[in-house]
Image (cartoon, rainbow, N blue to C red; front, side, top):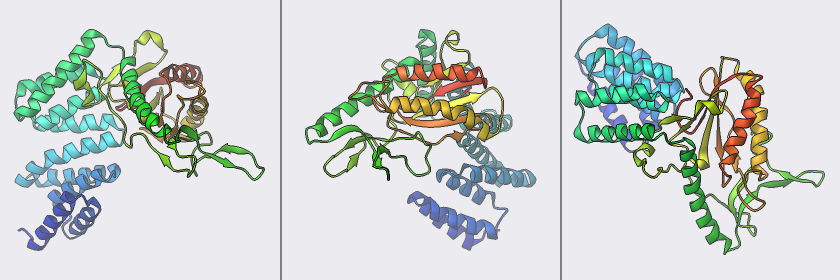
Length: 387
């Protein structure tokens, strides 16, 4: 029997979520679950909320518990909520950089409901972001043949499928997406830098600090890697006030392939060029470039960092000092700490500034040397999952 008190709090939680207050929504939902731990609708709502807050591990655990309860109940509510839980589980796996887990979640859903449009399209998009284009093509073709979704979504997926097939047919080199993202970002950067230089502002200035010995050195953010020097996009030398060109990762479209900017599609570099797989995503924002290195075997995270970090550090230092630009411009600006991505991969995010795309070739050259010591399976530039 329904609990009016719980239902009222549930409504309050949904209001908080709609009002963009997921923290309050999570608090209310957690309290309700303490009173009613078997309410899978509340479990689903909390999992969605946790996922929205970036708590993928918690969301994943909640979906597994909800699915366990639903399997035991096997009633109408369970039948309704179970597919939703599986979709959230797949999304949580993707956020945890576990594409294999996401594939299992989607496949489990489709084993239960073969024509579920969210499951079919979700699996197709996972394959696209994982570089498995032939399987993505098959799933999208099946989704379109099912015709089980709203017309606007069917048309969007048809457009995406046509665009993927066109890129494959024309054999577009993945370097073109890197060039497009760099070109668009640099055009915007140059525009604002030109405006602010008239006011005396300086572009790409290094953030420096004076040591006790009186030397002026790069200022490294507290807790960051020792090589993680920072260059400020724009700075007023009179006040030290800094400004950023673009406060969000800048995703752009490649001319003639505009639909591929709407979702990450991972495209392979010609295999003959490198001893390991190299891939580029159609979403590879130059001001927040994701670099994923996947090794050929699992290893302790610290061991992977010990192997890769010196290589990334030397490359980043070269970029900060202008090796991929000029004495006046074209230097790296910022780099995040390495993050694990599954058991065999590490991810770095780099603000490439106005550095030239030959910086990518330089990194691949360095990684070829590392490959001889610790074999690399694949490298991915941009959003998605390294195949």
